[in-house]
Image (tube, helix red, strand yellow):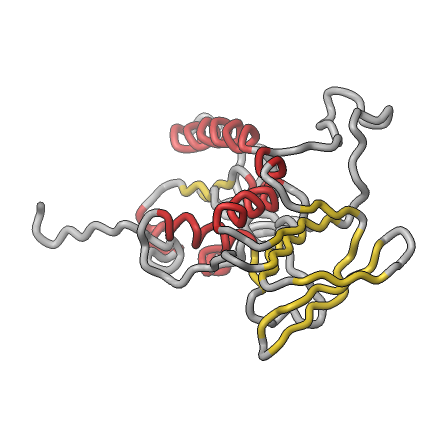
Length: 255
């Protein structure tokens, strides 16, 4: 090993390596950091212990499985409520099953999707139909058309969730020792890298880019969910290829 060489297993770009350093060292920089800013739940009791963003829960579980020694969120023996009916919520559902939760309910604000495509949802649009993942087949309750209004706790820790049924406003209550927020994402995390670069943003909170994938700063490009918003991996793959071609054109003077 060369003297003075330091290898890092994790590098926080923007913190360990500053935006200024990147700009000085590289002729082109591609931002592909995803859209990981979670949508929060603005209700009384949100600050209680036992209420977590879904991605914090899933990330800690992955690291725990890899043997990392860190505090982790364990659902064993707990009554779990997952707020959000998407893929992230389904990932949480499968994980809490494996951890041995006492019960689990997944709440969704929208109505139960139809079994088949509606006339207003023709191909090739994404089919808005009722789906059952492998996690749902393992168990748990799926509750549609409900809105959370309050979280209540004992000694600073969540113990129950309160809400209303959207259709008629009927109140309901359920046990909740662990609440996981899986309500989607609002754009890229506004970390130090984005703050220091001071990039132009869109009205949706994503990074603005032109038709050559370049942001408002010359030589800085963006691809994937960071500029598109929360989407599918196939779009990220396509964006990566197109932005790579655009960067090649920029570096070779073809664009």
